[in-house]
Image (cartoon, rainbow, N blue to C red; front, side, top):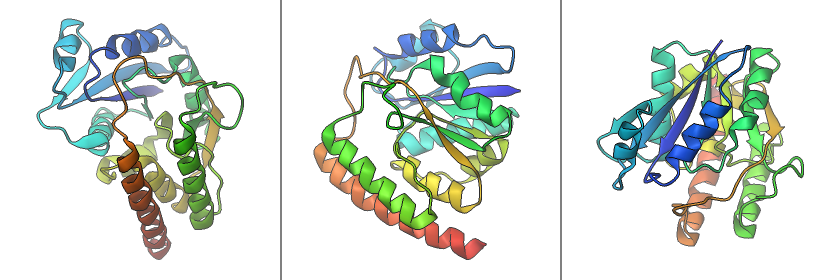
Length: 238
């Protein structure tokens, strides 16, 4: 089995070396082959130079496409290179690569089609994000329950893995802004099995999140609308 770790990175020059070292330290496994690709999303710092100096596997986008465009580029790469599983992994070193196997094995064993690294289904992760964001995540979890009849606790987790069928879907169609909740609705409504896996996450060491309080309001409004519309569309496609 071939597993690709997709790493979207925007201005992560201070974090990307630790991120890749973490993945490399956890890449040896007899059950699958683990590769990675960094999608440098038009960074304006020296992320490109750091990647090239360290001979990292990287695709440098000429313009900033946003998280959706960067991640979709990774899925296109996974599809073109015939990977069996694709796993998203943030470039800010908040995700812990020692949990990659926990996300991958249920898919290899054909128990599920998609796994989500979750901070909220156990006390494993001390880092839970801000109180405001936790309230937003709970609200989106409520919307998902209404639209799909399935409960997912860590709705916005970018630490997740999918099988080859879902790689094809995401390579063809992937939302641009804040894509995690919307794509969850799409996958579940199409009948794929999704499971949360307890993981540990870290606080960001360098740089800052692109989601400001004002953007959070926009985020909640846009994502709620997108989840409902996606649910209606997918129901109509059945």
